[in-house]
Length: 126
Image (cartoon, rainbow, N blue to C red; front, side, top):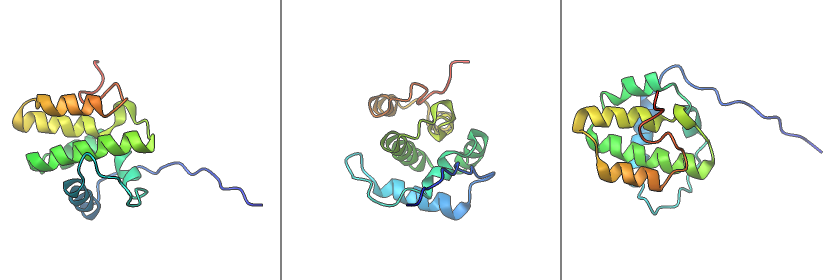
């Protein structure tokens, strides 16, 4: 009999450009109704990256890329039970989107309808 040991997720100190591009491509191909059957292990360390890192990377993204990433990461966080709370990258991505295009009310409603994370999409009040 063997026993697996729990290994904590190692959050990266910066977002790898290739991994971010791969994530953006996945987000663009994923619809709200799609079943995420691809292996998600490579996404979890990205999702645990500090929001400051996500904020820096989000500055270079287009509005549609931000929306796609927000939707994908919202769904994955919920389906994988990651419970990122106020550390969710969705918060940093939403702030970047808000700076570029203002508040997208439809996206806010979608995020709230598809997540149990009370901090999404705006982050903590204080």
